[in-house]
Each structure stands twice: as structure tokens, then as C-alpha cells.
Length: 80
Image 1 (tube, rainbow, N blue to C red):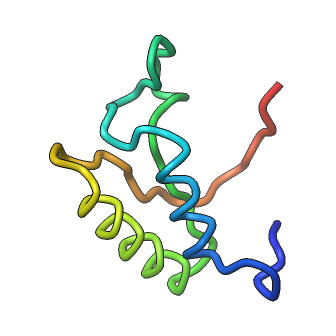
Image 2: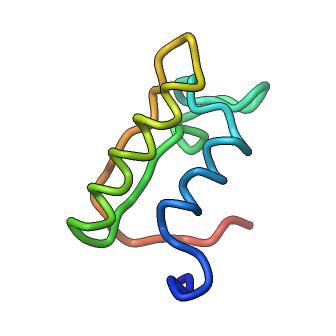
């Protein structure tokens, strides 16, 4: 989790959008597969609204479509 008193969810999303390429579908550079997709998993309706706003902000910075999806939050596994 994160501490919203220290950083907002929207700020985290904006950081995410500048640290990966949200215009690549199911890949990041040479890494290919659905596990490399650009996706946001909001925990509630407020986070979903912030996610949609962050995608719109990111789109303003790109000439090609942002392909980031918003998906239901399900079971989560940490990366190895």
C-alpha cells in the first residue's frame, strides 16, 4: 500500500506514466507478453476516476495512443 498523506494516488500514477512507455501494447521494450502490459488496478471508484484522469494527462504527452487499461483488482502476486 501507500500512504496518501505522503503522496497522492494521482501523483503515483503520473510517476508511473513517465517511468514506462504506456503506448506499447503488451510489452516494454524487448520484454513481450501480457504481464508487461500497462495497466492500473484501482481499489475503489475514487481511484478508478483518478486513473482515468491520469491516462488523459499521459495521453496529452504522447502523439500515439496510450494503451493503458483499467482492470479489476484481483489477487496480486509480487514480482520475483
